[in-house]
Structures are given as C-alpha cells and as structure tokens.
Amino acid sequence: MRKNIYLMCVISFLQGLIFYGPIATIFRQSRGLSIYEIFIIESIFMVLMICLEIPWGYFADRFGYKKTLVFSYLLFFISKIVFYSAHSFRMFLLEAFISALSFSGISGCDSALIYSSAGEKHSEKAFSYYNASTAAGFFIASVMSSFLIKISLDITALVTIIPYFLAFLLSFFLIDVEYKKEHISIMESIKNAFKSKEIFIFVISMAIVSETTHSICVFLNQPKYFESGISLKYFGFLTAFMQIICIISAKSYKLSKRFGSDKVIKFLFIVITISSIALGLTKNPFIVIILIAVTEGAFALCQPLSSDIQNKSIKTNDRATLLSTYAMAGDIIASIINLSIGKIANISINLGFIACGIFSGIAFIMVFVFFRKSLQTN
Image 1 (tube, rainbow, N blue to C red):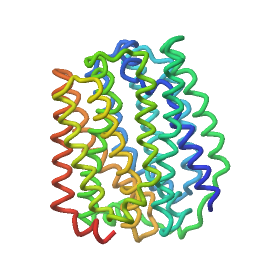
Image 2: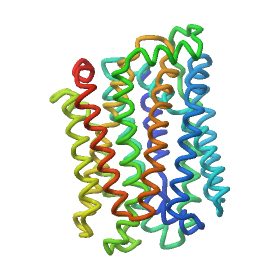
Image 3: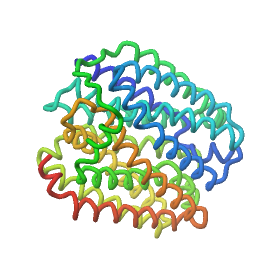
C-alpha cells in the first residue's frame, strides 16, 4: 500500500499550490468583501462542514475510501473555478458551499486511507509526510505568487485551478484498502465516538487551536503586515518562509518518540498562546514575522500528532465515520471561535490576535487538565 502513501503525498503537494494564498484576504477584499464578511463566510463554511461530515464518513465506510476521495477532489477542483469567478458575497458563499462538500468528503477519509495503508506502526510517519507535502506545495506557490501578483491579483486564482485538476486526475490511481465493512448505522457510529470523553476533549482543544492559528496565518497576518509597514510585494516571500517552517512537520514523529506526544502538544499549545498574544502587542515588522512563523510552525507539528492520536483511539471498523464525527465536533467549536475572532478583529486587528491567544490558552488548559492520561497512553 505504499503507492497510496506516495499518491496522497503528491495530491497533498498539488493542493498546497494555492498561488493566491499569500494574498487571500487582500484578494477577497479586492473583490468587495470586508474582514467581517470573510469571517461570516468562514463560519457558514464551518456550519456546512458540521452538517456534512458524518454523512460523508458513513458513505466512505459503506462504499469505499477511493470513491469518496475521487468525488471530493472533483468538487475541490470545481470550487477553485468558482473562486476565480467570484466578484460578490454570494459567489464567494457558493464557493464556500462547494468547498465544504469537498472538505467534508476528504476530512477523515484521507486520514483513514493513509492509516489503513501505512499500518499502526508507520502511521505517524505517514501523517507527518502527508502534512509536510502540503507545506512544500504552498512554499513553491508562495514564491511564485510574489512574481504573479506583479502581473495581477486575478492570475494567482486562475493558475491555482491547474494543480487541483491534476490532483483530481491522480485520485483515480489510488487503491482502495481492504477492511471489514460491517453494517453499522450512523447512530451506532456516533455512540461509538462518544464512548471516549477524553478523545472528544482532545478533539475540541485541537479545533480551538486549529481555528486560532488558521485565523492568524490566513486572515489576520496580511493586515498585520500592512500595519507593520511591510509592502505587498513581500507577502509571497514571507508566506514561502512560513512554509519552510511548516515543512519541519515531516519530522514531528521523531519529537513524539523522544519526548512523548503529550509533552510535545502541551509545549506547542503554550508556544501558540504566547505568540498570539505577543502579536497583538507589537508592530515591529521583524518580531511580527518571527511570531507568525513560530505560530504556523508549532501548529504544523501538532497536526500529524493529532491525526495519529485520533486514529489510534478507534478500534471499530467504522473508522471514516468516527473520524468525521470527531471532525464535526471540531467544526462546531471552530465555527463559534471563528465568528468570535472575526467580530473582535473587525473592531481591532490587534484585539483579534489577543483573542486568539486567550482561546489557545483555554485549549492548553483543557489538554493539560483533562487529557493527560489519554495522551500518555497513546
């Protein structure tokens, strides 16, 4: 099943080629959206994910991971075409709807396929390389973006369509894994997921940190660069620099083997909390760049550890459905956090960063107090 791992890494790399990424907020603003409208769309996206996660996971468990991924990658490709064509709130909302259909199909299913293909012994390493592949793709896209924006902002969205089409084509070469397909109802799967309160506490804490870092590294960073006096022409290079930091996530499994997943995650949560608050208190361009890099790198290290912990907690055959249930729970929390940060950031960008730090601090307390034993077991 090594072929699946290689293909998923290549697909991950291609989907990291988001050429408009370094100017995502600026691009949307140039098409008429406000910061608050951007966060509203993000929250609607999260609500859609909540509704779609479990049905997609159930479909994957019943009909196969490959079929689910192929259709989801097709939708992802279509969403990029809509994004390029969008010039209004409604069109960006349509893009969010199609993206939610795609993301919810991929979410949990990609993780289940990789875990089943790699096996429990090598799963953490496989997840590390899978996440690092996205960062590598985004690194290249970010460097190229610095040159593309000199032509126009629009071209960055146009060329992004190409790698997403290639990712869709590659998905046809995936091999579906062999696993026992029991007829387990959706309600039975949800009950299985809720049997472990500890894993849900972990999932919620990861969702909080995921949304705060996403807000910082995708939406709030660009206005902060402007506030710090950094020119738009450097945004692509800065994003590329951030992705170099993220590529270190390929070695996160070595950190967990040496120090333990619990200690590594707790430390990274503290780092994210401190960095977020510090971003709201400084305007020094050099310090801003370092703090955003630290935040992005810390979360990049958390992701493969989180995927491995969630997969190893599952002992039944409805893996994709359970992972989708975990993702749904995370999406519920993330949608609330996202809307809160958006509202605060609309008042003040710096208050938005401080809010991210407070939320991350709450996530750290949850992990430290409630999930200590479970992390040490994993």
